[in-house]
Image (tube, rainbow, N blue to C red; front, side):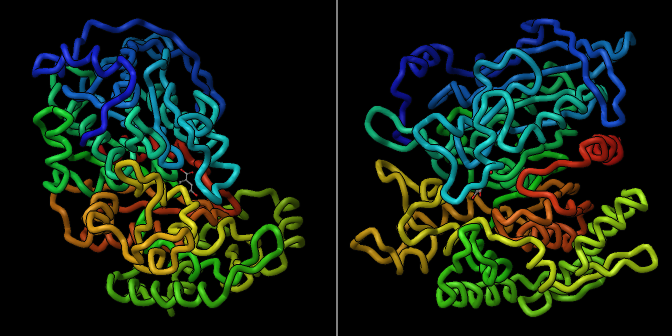
Length: 506
Ligand code: DHB
C-alpha cells in the first residue's frame, strides 16, 4: 500500500509503532452508566467500562478508521457482573462500503459510516435505508446494529466496535486507500488485536461474534468465512497487525450485499421484470444476458437447499425461496397479528392464501407485491461506472473500475480496455465469503445468523440464501430467516440474536 493519510494523524502514530503499541491498556477506561430498554420494554440500568478509540494496528494508514472502542458491563440493575469470560459482540457500523469511524465515540453504539462525508455519498441506486446511516451515531441501517450493541451490553456481553477504511478515502496524492480489500483487512486486524490481548481485554476472545448490516453484513459474513485465510497475510503485515488468529466464533449478517461479481446476474434473475419506481422497465436484453450468467453461476455452485431441497438452480430457486423462506416468513408475520389485523392484511393482499394457519402464494404474485426494483441494470457493475461498487473496486488514483467481464466489455465511459484490470480476480476473492465457503475454509466461523427483509431489492434474495446453503453444506449451524414486508437494513428480532449468542457460545 502506497497510500498514506494526508493529515498529521499518521505522523503522530509513527512513534507508537512497534510491538508495545498493540498491548491493550486495561486501566484506560472511564465508567459510564446508561439505561437500556430491552425488547419487551423493560428498562435496565447498565454500568460499564468504556475504552475510547484504540488504534488496532502498529502501522496505521489512517487511525481515524483503524481504531476500535470497547464496552464491558460491570453492573446491571444494581448487580455486579463479571464480563471476563463473556462473549464479545464485534459490531461494525459499515454502510455502503463507506469509511466507518469510532474515533470520536464517547459511548457504546458510537460507530457509524460517514455516508455524507468523505466525498462519497450513498452508493448508486442506494436506497433511503442506506442514506439514513449518514447521521453520526446511527448507522446505515436505521440503528439496527446499534440495538444489537445495547442489548448485548445489557445481556452482560462485551461489545467491541471497530472502525474500518472505506471506498471514498483519498490521500493528498489522489490515491484511494480505502477501496477493496481495505475494509476486510482492517476488520481482520481488529480481530487479531483482540485475540492477541487475551487475558487483558475483557471478554472471551475465543467467543467473538461478528455483526453488521448491508455492506457491514457483507464484511461480517466475509470475516466469518475467511478466518485465518492466508490470502490476507501481506496486507495485514503491511499494517503491522498483531500476530494472532483472525478467526471468529460466530457470524451475524443482516442483508449482506455480497458475492458482488455475481450479483448483477442474481439481481436480474430476481427483480429483472420488476419496474423501477419511475415506472420504467430496465433494458430486458441486458437483463436476460445477466440472468443467463446467474443460471451458469448457480449451477456451478452445486449447492443443496436447506431441509433436503436438492440442488439449487436458476430453475428451482423461485420455488425454494417461496417454500423455505417467504411463505414461512409471511406465516410468522400473520400469526403475530390479531384476528382483525390479519383479516385486514389478507383483504388487502389477496394473493396470499391463508389456510390451516399457513400462508401460501406464488413467486410471481410475491414479485408483484414487492413492486419497484431499487436499482437499474446492471445493478452493481454499472456500464457508466456509477455504482458504489465501482468505487469499491477502484485502485490507485482511479476512483471507479469495472469488476466483471460483462461490465468492462460494455463500458460506456470511453475506457481503452474492455477487460477488467489484472488484479481484479484476486481482489474479488479477497472480498467474497463464497470464495472461502466454496473451499471449506477450516478457519471459518461455524455458526451463522443471517437475516433479510423480503422487500429488500438492494440485492437479490438469493445472495443470503446461497450464503446460508454454502455454510450449511459444510455442516455449519445456520439460522436464516426473512423478515416479512421489511426493507433494506431491517433487524426486527435483535432480542433473538442476543439469545442465540448465549446458546451458541454457551
Ligand atoms: C449498501 C447498499 C447497497 O445497495 C449497496 O449496493 C451496497 C451497500 C449498504 O446499505 O450498505
